[in-house]
Every structure is written in C-alpha cells, then in structure tokens.
Length: 228
Image 1 (tube, rainbow, N blue to C red):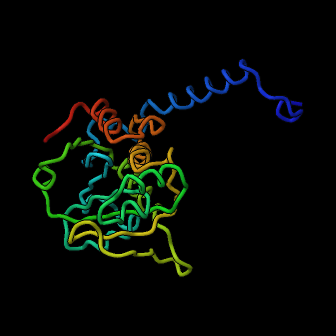
Image 2 (cartoon, rainbow, N blue to C red; image 1 turned 120 degrees about the horizontal axis):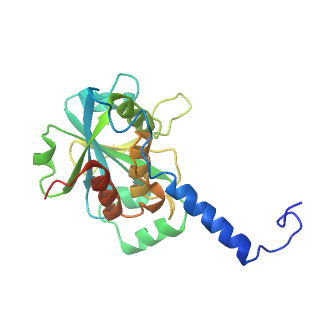
C-alpha cells in the first residue's frame, strides 16, 4: 500500500520524485513525432504560419491545403484563401476591450472557451505585416493531424452542429464555442502549441504559456522568424 493510501503526507523525497517525473514528461515532448515532422525527403509539404498578436498567438493555414472533412467548419469561409484560428477564454476574447480584471478572472477561474476564426486573401506576409510570423513546413500527414485537432476543438449542439456566437474581431471573422475549459495552465498559447504538437512539431506545450515562448520554440525548430 502506498503512502497516499495510508494518509501519509509525501516527504521531500517523494515530492522531488514527482517534480522530476513532471520534468521528464515535459521534456519528452521536445523531440519531433517521427513520421509526421519534419517532412521526409521528397515528401509533399504544406506551409502553416504561427502569428503573434502580442498577448496571444494564432495559426494560419491555406484553406486549399486542408483535406475535405477534417475541418468542415471552413465552409463558413468559402470566399477566402487563408484562415487564421485562435483559441481563448470566452469573455475576455469576445470583449470589445479586455480589462485587467477580466484577464485575472480568466487566469484564476476555469471558464468556457471560444475559437476565433478569420478569413483573408493573403499573402500572409502582407496581411500580417505588423506581426511577428513564423512559417512552418509540415508534411501532408502532419497537416492532416493539425486540421483534425482544430476541427475537433469546436463544441457541438445536440444535433451535432457547431455553435456560432457571432461576429469576430474583424469584418471577416467569427466566434465559435469551443469544447475545452480555459484556465491558468491552459491558455491560448498552450493551445497553439498543442495544435502544432499534434502535427508532430518538436514544441513543448508545458512551457508555452506566453506568446513569446511559442514564437521562440517555433523559430528554434523551423529555422527562423519572419517580420515585422
């Protein structure tokens, strides 16, 4: 019978072992997922872009690169060549102007989340000229995993339809209710990192609490940053 079952408080040795195990698990995500990233020699590739908006990050994909059925909600953006998707706390993300109080509440209290999806014509370098951008070249299999991850992030109603919450932050954008709960250790930036990790990228979501860390890790494994 273990210490916890006997009601014994773990000592320093046990605590140290737990911390070490957590560190090992986090470090275990650093390497790429073989067979997904990097693309093999001669393998077809597709670019995605990670964009920093200061506090939070988003992922841009070329819509025509996404296989049919993996991200069906893209039908809402039929008139655009590119889409950017971000995830975040519902009240803060949807507010016309977020406040420090809203940010603190989002960090301290688990709450519902949304996806913000925006369509644009491209190219990415023009539409995000004022933002920091990192281009990542994924294998086709990696892109399929990424698209499936994002498609699965939408909450659905009883009929299986996505739940649209209204217009987004730009004229060509929308908010959708998302499945997962937002809290201090699951932020918009860790979500971006998990999305990239699903594609096989050697990024560690455990560390990616800030936009700066997401961009740092992305630049480190793909070879550089672009703009502004």
